[in-house]
Image 1 (cartoon, rainbow, N blue to C red):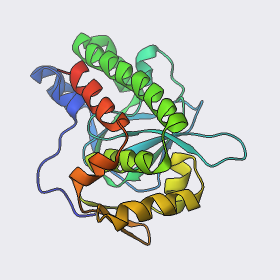
Image 2 (cartoon, helix red, strand yellow):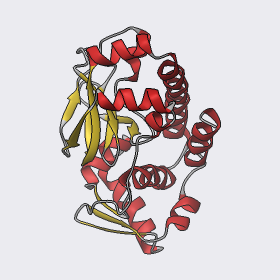
Image 3 (cartoon, one colour):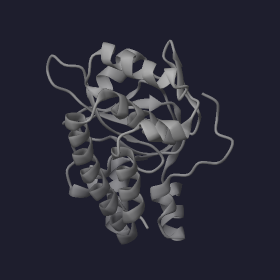
Image 4 (tube, rainbow, N blue to C red):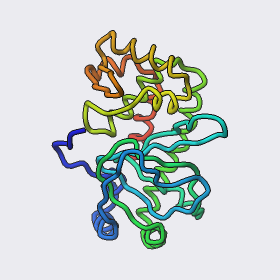
Length: 234
C-alpha cells in the first residue's frame, strides 16, 4: 500500500481545543501499525491506547469453534481503548491491525490521567462511545437482515475510507471470517462486484475501481454509519 499523498490526522484529536490536542499529542509516541499484530485481547488490561492516522484496526469477537467475527473498524476517525472512559481497564474484545500505517500511542496509565485533567477530551470520547454503541447495533442488524454482496460492499467502503488508498490486501478467508460467512459466499459476492467493474480482486489484492458503484451496491448501513458520526461530531 502506498503512503497517502496528504497528511492524515486523527479526527478525535483534531476535534479537541488546540491546547488539549497539543498536550495529548506531546504525551503520545508515533508508532507504525504492522498488519496482523494483535494489540489487545479480551479481558486483558489495556497497556496502550492508539489513535490511528493512516493505519486501521479491526475489533473482533471470538466464540469457541468459530472464526473471529469483526465488530467494526477503527481508523483515523476513532481510537482503540476508549472503553477506559468507563473506568474498566479490561479490553472488551480482540483488536488486530487490519491496515498497516501510522498511529499515535499513549500508555493506558497516562491516558487515564489525561481523562481526569481534560473535560474536553472526556466530552469528545463520550460522543465516540455513543457512535460505537449505535455502530454495534447497526452491524448486528446488517448481519441478520442483509445479503452477503451488499454487506461486502459496505465493508469494502469502510475499509477504503480508512486505508486512504484505492488498493489494499484482504484474502477471501479473512473476508469470510470478518463477515461471518463461508468463503464460497465471499467468492460469489466479490465476483459479482468484479463483473460489474466495481472492484478488481485477485489473490487477496483488492482495487477499488468505481467508488460510486460500490456505494450503490452497498446496503444502507454504510451511509447510516457515516451520517451518525457526522451528526454526533457536527
